Image 1: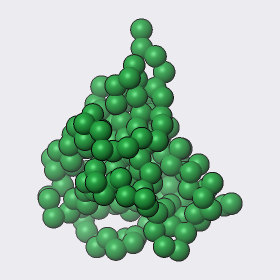
Image 2: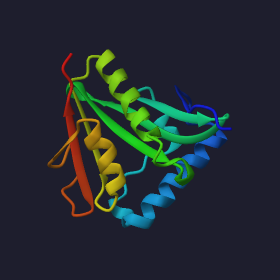
Image 3: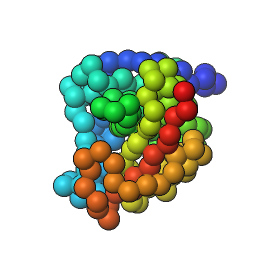
Image 4: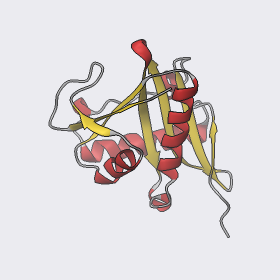
Length: 155
């Protein structure tokens, strides 16, 4: 019997989390040319402007996501990934919810993100969480490989 998935802030500098990040990078490279992939390394994810959430079931890391803070009260949803065997169980939705709660608690006023143009499952997670499509955000270039989302946070 499986236990509930637990989501907590963790360091990305753990071998198990590095493996999850490597899976995420490989999955993205199957969908998008490398020059249109905007990866963060585990070391970049460990910087003070970023908080990483890890979802675990029975102690195993099964999903990740991060909040990266930018100037002007903007938070960016980054590094969202759920291992295939755990998809469809709203694990990603749980991570997005935790990211949004932290952003609100810190007084951020807007969340933004960039995702792949060939990932409708990700779009569904973001749209169910109240994000709407928008034009390019932050310093991302306009690209046919990218889909951008935003959500205004009322404090």
